[in-house]
Amino acid sequence: MTNPSTDGGVAVVEMFTSQGCSSCPPAEEVLTDIERDARERGQPVFALGFHVDYWDDLGWPDRFADASYTARQETYARAFGTGRLYTPQMVVNGTVEFVGSDHRRAAGAIASALTSTATTPLTLSVQDADGGHRVVVDYQAEQPPQRTVLNVALVERDLVSEVARGENAGRTLRQDNVVRAFVSVSLSPERGRMELSVPPDLDPRNATVVGYVQEGGNRTILGATAIDLSTA
Image 1 (cartoon, rainbow, N blue to C red):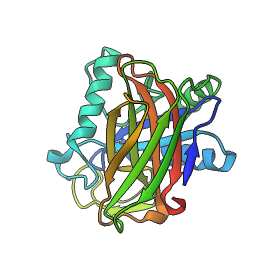
Image 2 (image 1 turned 120 degrees about the horizontal axis):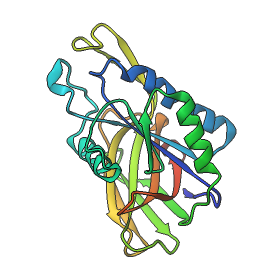
Image 3 (image 1 turned 45 degrees about the horizontal axis):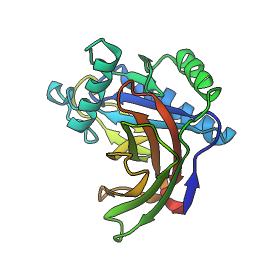
Image 4 (image 1 turned 90 degrees about the horizontal axis):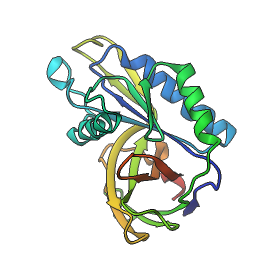
């Protein structure tokens, strides 16, 4: 199935989080609300929860954590000039960052993003090519600037984890929009194919492929789209 991006503004909401962080569950509820509200309104808002791994040695190893997601947050820290990593951190369209539980700040940043124009429309065509072991994504971007990348994430909703240790010990965490796979490629050429490895426990009924075009320098998001895996 093919899904083109909107011609208007888009809002890509990336949150850096961890199951070992007691401040993160409220922020993840905000991310869930953002995604649910966007679906109900039909708005081009795309929510992604990147679970970082630097909490893993502090009592509870997050089963969704990945060192590459920590590296992505480090890249943002350099771009923002802070050099500081913290959770929960929310980043909207690659240029605005704040504490992820700040619902009002998130709403304002998303509203502002949607008033802009996506300058690089993106089209994705997704197919499950190997019996659930991988997802193949064909993409096409319209005249992307130089030094841009295409990020493609496989996110999953309605995940439940029983946390036995750490700051959230004894809690049952229900999490949405969890990034289960992530790949970035240079948008030169403007079209191509990429492959995502599918976790064996992924439920395709609750999974979405999100693609977004991002400048390599200032990290600005130039276009985005998404497609539910169940309809691909």
